[in-house]
Structure formats: structure tokens, C-alpha cells
Length: 177
Figure (cartoon, rainbow, N blue to C red):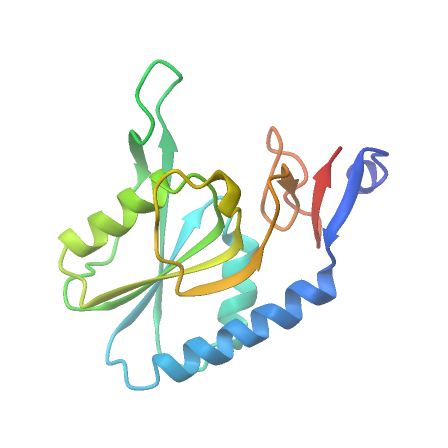
């Protein structure tokens, strides 16, 4: 991590303490909203959401199960919005309340696909919890039920977000100049 933090082109956008404070606030809202849930499944979208998901789960007091989803966009030669499932959830979502946990909402294509799939699989309810909302890049609308921070159109790294698989382990959200 020392080499990444020492990068002169790296700037802090959201410090670690601000991240943790906001995550505690999001968890309080989720605990309130799911207090009566009989079956809650929190699904993290790999790989970027892992840090956020773990810290969020530490604050949740409602009973839940955890699962993961991983997708990737197809290559440049295809239309926007084509998404490939690399790792599907293992748990059945039928009849369950689903909390989808994502690191960042950008264009919206991938999340629209995942949310539609979860609804198609007859989840009782599906809500999205996203740490970052990069609204300036949105091409398709997706409902964000629990939003951490709205950010400008900058390339962010840290706290799970990467550039060529680097910087994920930074304890803050930064951007590369």
C-alpha cells in the first residue's frame, strides 16, 4: 500500500473517517427498514463492493444471509448494457428481501441488469445500497435506495475500487489526476 499512497497523482476525495461515519448512517437506515424482514439476503457485487459490504455488515443488527454476484461488461465491439454473469448468487432469492450492495453506480447498465434479474427471480423486494453515485455518467436510471456519496465525474480508486487491480486496499476513496 505504501507505494500506492505515495503516488504523487493520487488525491483523497473521501477520507476513511467520513466513509465510516456515512456507512454507520446507512446501516442505521437499513436496520430500521428491515426490522420486520423475515428473510433478508445482502448481495455484494464483486470485487469492488467487498470493503464496503464488510464494513456495512458489521453495523447491521437484522438477521441476514450474505451472497455475491460478479459481472463484467462485454468487450468494446458490443452494444452498451450487455453484461456477462461471471459468478451468480448461490442462494435462492425467491420470496426474500434482497439488499444489493455496490461500490459505485456509473452508467447504470450493469445494475439495471442485476436488479431486473433479481426481480425476475421473484425476490419479495429488491433495494440498492451504493457507496458512490456518479450521476454525471448515468445513461440508464436505477433507483438507489441507500446512497453513501454523490461524486463528480472523476476516476476513483481505493476502498475496493481499482485501477488495473491496484489501489483496492486504500482505506479512503481517492482519485488519480
